[in-house]
Length: 173
Image (tube, rainbow, N blue to C red):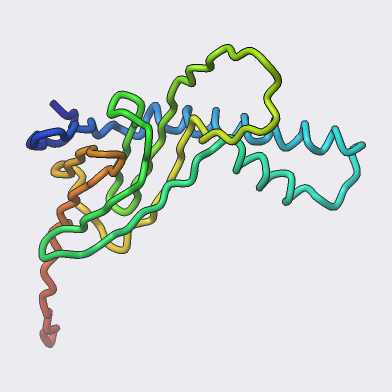
């Protein structure tokens, strides 16, 4: 069911496929380009005055990418992570794991309804998520499992086996 790992499916949970990092960098580049384009639009609309580039970038990022809040816990032989991805299905999320890095990226379609009348105020959740997490220790990428339930993505990441330390005593020649 997953490309590089296996997972058990429990009631009302969806299994998330763990992907390789190859296609992921292209998707991250597309998100970055969209943020850059929006930040430039803001810069351009202000008469191309310098001094607010960081503010424009952060505002564009907030408009386009939904923040992913994560919690990582260590339990025995595993790292356990929970990430909030409300409104995203398992088909809309892509997860990449490396020995010390985890990347979550997602994009969903927005169903806009045509309404009569004038909209006076509107707030909408972003249709994209992007989160890169540097892990505190190396993990065994072959055995990572992920499930999605009620907008919470749960990952179980087994720690990588530690190499044995041996003492070597030099002999006299």
